[in-house]
Length: 438
Ligand code: SF4
Image 1 (cartoon, rainbow, N blue to C red):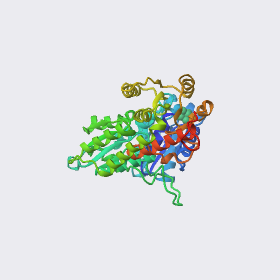
Image 2: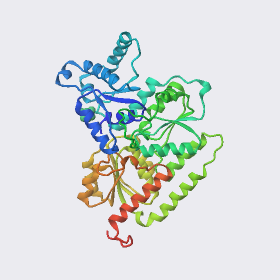
Image 3: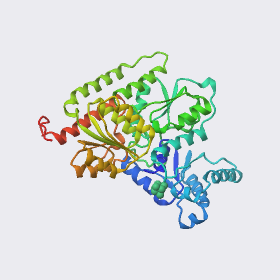
């Protein structure tokens, strides 16, 4: 997935924001198509609609025209301009064009143009993981105001990473149970999992507000839940001295324990709500119930690096064997995380760091796996090798409900555990669930 894809997802978590892709129409069509079929929501992504002529003469005119049109048509609270392969290659000075445009708009119209945040997302390097990270940094760099000391109170910044709306909701729920307040950077829990109301909304009507982003430097800490989305926390720390802690994605028992312990340490009284203790107990109970089916099963896991690391940690806790671990985003951090998890086990998995589905398929043929865990693109491998695919991550376009998949926290872990185990039972056991077929 290319960088603007991650940028658009981050922008769709901001109330009243409109993403604008400075590139050809095909780029924004691709984003809309991919996001729409995953989240099953109408996705609005605007485009500067560059053509052959503008590639030769530069995209300034189109960018200005697009900004003016968006203001007239939608009057957004924020416009997030992301570059694309094309505009990065021709070298458009997007920041400079925006600065000049804002000055002339103020002079001619006598009022400020809505905030514009420019994000450099050259898609020939990196992936949507970097695009998401860069967007959070850009938002904080451009909008966050210096802290007011009297305002430092029980608020924490959370950078969740590129998660499903249901996972973001679960994170918010845990924070609420811990009696803390949060600023989620950014909150897609409502905008990408919206109820049917009968009215058509062209901009996210819920999500992180601009005011919250402006106040992020007043928070007592920033917790980053995805190691590949840590630049925003680093920026707040460097610029405003906001403490920053990077955690593993809270998938499974150990990672969730660590998340809750960290939240607990931020409170005056370090107690864990009984509801969370109960949910932890239920997850443990579920693990005991499922181990007959899951223990020793070889699993190939692929997807975004933080998601994959979290899933590897969880399947190891379940007694499964991660035989192939793959990500398309090449990362030393990923390699380090996987080594750390597997060094405490007897497993020696094949790690594909920065590979593609072809590499994954070759490894499945060579090493073998009883189960695939990842996005819908693994469907063909699953069919070819006659193994089940447990769908998790992005994109999931051949099933409904991707926006409601929750795997974080104890509750999400239990739902993941049940569905994973049932996938194994369905494929490997007869109708009674007792007799082993394969
Ligand atoms: S890879 Fe480049 S050309 Fe393709 S959609 Fe992404 S930005 Fe556009």
